[in-house]
Each structure stands twice: as structure tokens, then as C-alpha cells.
Image (cartoon, rainbow, N blue to C red; front, side, top):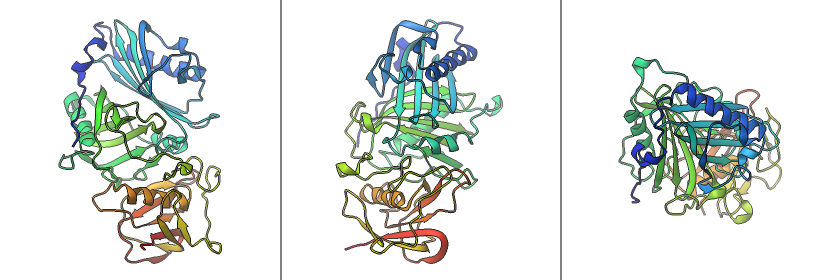
Length: 401
């Protein structure tokens, strides 16, 4: 088991502001200037900035001139966490409708009344489960509003909930304070539908150390941003904690910068079928591009299309139209096509991430998506014992040879 290296508030001693005026108003004004700078592609709009600023992107040294902040983006959604104890901020930015989609996470640390350090994670097409349209759809529906003062959790409770979630990746004996409902937005994939039965305790990998953690905590909204190394990959996990329980989880994983983080290199696949890996392409489907509000269906299947082999693997699935396997669900994930659904099952077969075992099949219910979002749901299955007829549904089972 890997040892966990935790960076607590004390580890950031040199970055802490000593100015008494590190108020929420001060932090929000600076965080808002970050959004304005990103919209304009003009780093000069970010204020106030220390002359000794340290600026990193994806855990590597960068400059304003070469970095994402010099690229103007259409910002469709932004949200801040303001940490007056550390004098730090975290900002989530979603650009889904511009010329190139991005989802960004930025931690800013202040010293002597100015930004002294910026850490930005930049995700785009090809990063883990990236789908800016899906991210925008779900993030904009969640409530990260102010929690009444008498119901707020302490910083220690909020960080402990985040740490428990991160620790379970390497130690399954850890007790995580799961909330019910709890919704996880991983890239653009959502583990629920915004309803009372949403769950976050699905699809958690094993044997992975989440190390080198950097925290920004805002008790007023129950939020903690954790920048960390996911087996060498720059990663962000952000949590909303209510009554000591996890309510929302947002993740960003920068596959293009693997190796920039600390820890053992990961075996997670990148989105490149040509490289012999499993490709998830929810922004650009594995078959054809898809307009908003549409899904890609191929039923009735053409001759010779009943069997499907996942590129880069020897896993072969038998496809069936208007068929559902109602039991054995390992989770629920939005995808735009049946190949995407099968690829997800292949990932969960080759890299098991559930106590229920390996994925043996899927059902894709393409009438489940919220109207106009182009999102329908894939249900990976740990068992495929019994099927039933169902319209607007396609299933596939792994052919065991």
C-alpha cells in the first residue's frame, strides 16, 4: 500500500496571508477578476498579483503568456470557494460553448494582500471522461449555496470527509461519510440523475494512492477543493459536505499531463484507440458527432454488427436491440452511443473498480436522458443472468471464450 502524504494548512505556511483584511469580499473580488481575465484572455485583469508570483498549470511551471489565462474563453459557468483562514480561493470554470471546450479548476493563494501562487488544472477533449456539455448540464443544477451558520460543519469535519473519500482508493477499510443522496460529477459523467436516490459510492478504484494533497476550504458552503496526484496524474477532487456527509463530488483528471504529479505512474487508459487503449469519447462519440438533444442509435443492427470487439482489447460483446438486463447494476453513467457504453464496461472489466467484480455486460437506456441534453444512461452489469424486452434499450454481454 502506498503511504499517503497529506499537506495540511501548516504545510502552506509561507503562502498564508498575514493581512487582517483577508475577507470574503476581498477574496471574491480577486476571484471574480480571475474570471474576467479568462474571459478576455488578458492576465493583466487578474488583481492584485504579487511581483514574486508562482504560476503552475497541471503541476508544471508555466507563464501567463504561455498559459491558458492568455486564451479568451466563453465562460458558461463559474463558482468560487473562499478560504479566509488560509487566504485562498478555488474557482471552477466551465467553457462548453466556445470554439474549444474546457473545464478548469484554479486554486489561488495570497500573501501580503496579493496573489502569490496560482495552481490551475486544465482539462479538455481527451482527458478522463471529459464532456464539458455534460459538466455544465449537471453542475448548473446543483445547489452549492450558503449553509445557515448553525448548520455548518467545521473545517476539520469537512477536510476529514474529503480525506476519507481519497483514502478509500488505497484502503477499502476506510469509512467514508457517504451522504444519501450524493452525486458525483466525474469529468462529464454523473452517477445519478439529480434525484433522491443518487449515490457516490459506485465505481471507486482500488490500489490507487491519492497523494500530495492541497486544500482550500470554505465552511460557509461546506466546500473543500483538493488538488492531488492520482498515481502521477494531476487531479482535482472537490466536495460539498452537508451535516458531515458527502453531498456532491466533482473531479478533474488531466490525462495529457500524466507524470507531472507525484506517486507511481498510473495504468489508467487514455482516450486513444490508436494507442491500443480503451477510448471514451463522450464529447465526440465513437461513431459520429452528435447534435445536442440527439443520441446515436444503430438498432436494428445491420448484418454482421451483432458482435462488437472493443478497439485495443480482445473483449468481444454480443449486442441485442430492445433488450434489458434489469439487475446487476454497477452504476449509471451518461453516454451518447452504445459503443461508448460497451467501452465503459471494458474499462470496468480490465480495471475492476467495484466490490461487485468485473463488468460482464451493459444495458443502454437511450430514452432516459433529460430532454434536450443529449444524455442517455449506460448501466454496467456485474451479472447478466436474465433479460427482458424493453423499447429504446440496447444491451450487450461479454462473450466468454
